[in-house]
Image 1 (cartoon, one colour):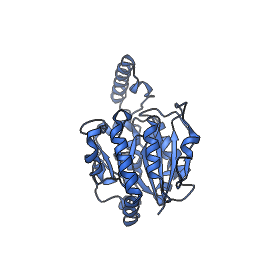
Image 2: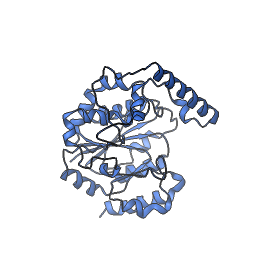
Image 3: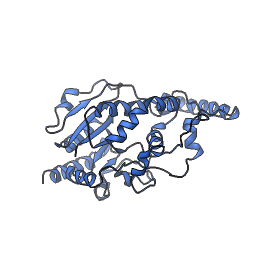
Image 4: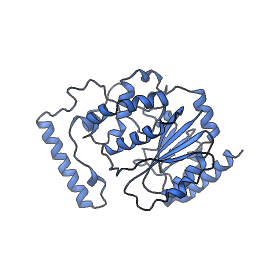
Length: 298
């Protein structure tokens, strides 16, 4: 089986380097979107890191957290990768790391070929709070993650009152939309057939999600739920990201950044990838790298 890893990155490039070296396998190709805000990325160095995998860089956009550009970034990666047919497309970030061998991952997806690994927070209903991400108009959210506390506070207040006014006037951008909306993690592993289906719906997705907020956690779940592909979703139909073989801890953080002392916990999680890591805790990164490098070479 052939796998395409679709990576969105904007910092912590030492983690990206180690992930590429661990993913380097004849069955894997790697597609990377480097945020346009990054000015000093060494494309040539990263392109030549892998000896078995092909590494491709996509066109670049300035991704704003929470904005439609996050969805645009996923579309850029999917459209580039589907030019060459793969059995699975795995969306991960530049601060994720593989925590299982390439052989183990290969065998699992071969055994479960055709299954769409997409997690859903709830398969019955979506909360009003989550639906409000697309129901109302949301203006650009570049200030929402600003390091300037005054700007963040100002954004929060303005955003609160803009939404309040829209609710007062009963704004509903979805009144003519017949989709049932669903939410879940935006980190997914999907088949070539479903990837092509997602691409075919790009114009509809743009119309619905362009003025949304954090809708990268809604659009793939919504497309899958409203299609025939839903019957192929992974059997663990819940919000446990273990069902998509990602180890993500939302109890200790948003999400939690694994620390040096978490090595055994991460490696024994039975997942294939973990998020997230920071070079501030470089010992666990190095330990995972050395451990997996040895396992991959067995």
